Image 1: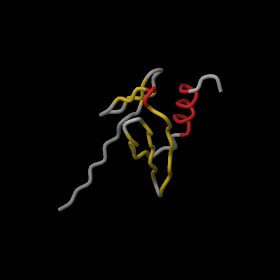
Image 2: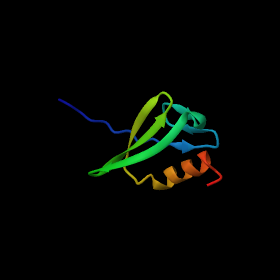
Image 3: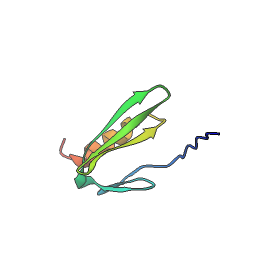
Image 4: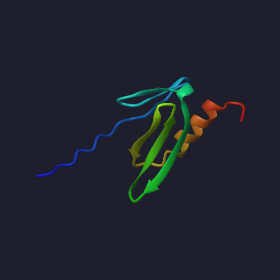
Length: 76
């Protein structure tokens, strides 16, 4: 029998890092954050100097992405 367990975690944006349940990304190492919706959820991508990390999200992360971009480039 196959089972599927879905965990709900938070992703936090700080002045110097993005923190998830299992990883920490320094903002200086995050080049971009993007989102691709599909069916009932979507994928949030963190583009870092160590590769791209995908996180399934069930809410629109537009506010998070906008806050990241303001944090990363405060002049704009």
